[in-house]
Image 1 (tube, rainbow, N blue to C red):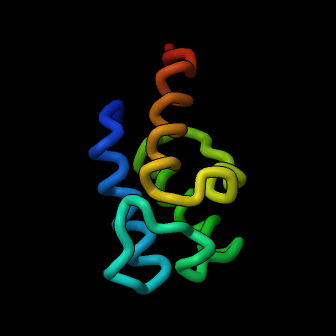
Image 2 (image 1 turned 180 degrees about the vertical axis):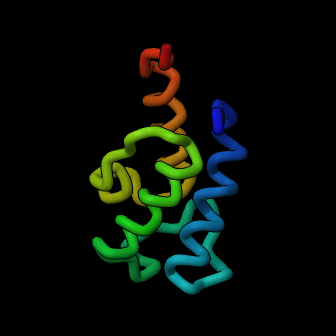
Length: 86
């Protein structure tokens, strides 16, 4: 899947946070750590993103960009800079 729309990816990541952390009140600005996130949850979220986007995504990004909106922005930026597959 090719997602270049930050708003759409933010919506999807917010859903992953809600499902993984078991909290339906989380939104695009919710902090991963304040919501109870840990390394296992980060790996689960990144794994789902990698499957969705068919791209390598570093787990460290969840720790560096802890809200869905921040994470979506950096992922879209990284994917737009990545060379296209042949």
